Length: 234
Image: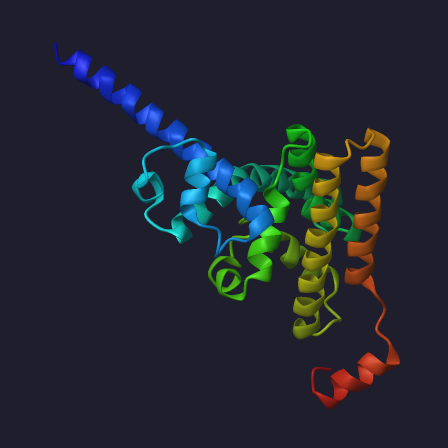
């Protein structure tokens, strides 16, 4: 007799998990278009066809927990792919610093793999973009926006350019992340609305990789050298 309650409990937990994932996916879709801070949570529940008015509070408690749940839908997959890429690149280089191209591929390719797998149904990058544009939410989630493995790319970049001041490394990597996000937001939107050919997607990704690499590896101009010297950074 005790087995029946455990079975019912298991089904109930599975149903709760299924509903939570449904709500998180709907939140990703709607918030990617309307913003993460001002979108009414009841609108998300209604779009997911949930009649219980307290369903969002029941599953997530508050808006911040919901945003964290949305990020968790994808960042784990991105982290696993990126970690695997970096480990493979490290084997290839045999202890030497990764090349700029390898670093940029590790930054971008895990995300584009997710976009391709979702076949135009992804809103992940645009959701991240909305957080990035909301100063309050960015302050709360900036350390987890791009996954736990993005710092590995940043460290690999710092290792590649030891001649650059730490402040400039930080600045350039931040600009590279912004460019990556902006470029992939556009790609994600195009994949949803225009059904581009695979070769067109490949060309777009290659262009984004080129742009991000150019930011990381731009030569120091004489103007920048003078400014850094005056700021006592070099």
